[in-house]
Length: 203
Image (cartoon, rainbow, N blue to C red; front, side):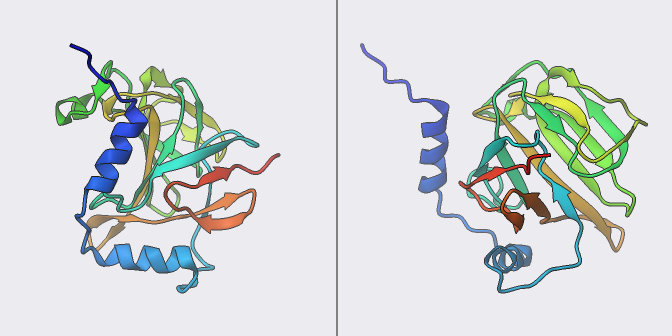
């Protein structure tokens, strides 16, 4: 018997386009307006892309994506294992997990997702997920600068393919709320969209 084995990227595409569930979260509509420019924002913090200057990566799942982001204002950057991950904003490291040694497209792998969380001067936090086993290059309590190398990307936790899962939260009324963020790209300041490639400005 011959078995056809599809690459992980094809599996993800099938999952994305076979899903018809759409989030009713009001933030989803707001983000769409920000991406299209129908809602203007010139006051929020501008983050750096979390990878080296002059390099580009594709967003394989954007905010409220239909695969695993149905209720998440998060971004997935396609990255090969071992890619250097840079801090998108300065702050203090409040969480590091790097002992996860497995990953796959099954929720049983979720606890193995290696990650780093950084708290910023305004109290908001950013998270970097699916890091390589022993791939954290910072420790809890470290102060990091914007653009500093903090980790190596991997494929740990609940994931079908190597990538960086990035998200930002802020506290509102005593509760943490995920938020969309602006990034400085080689083509200007943008709210990123799924399936597009973005280049980090050259130094």
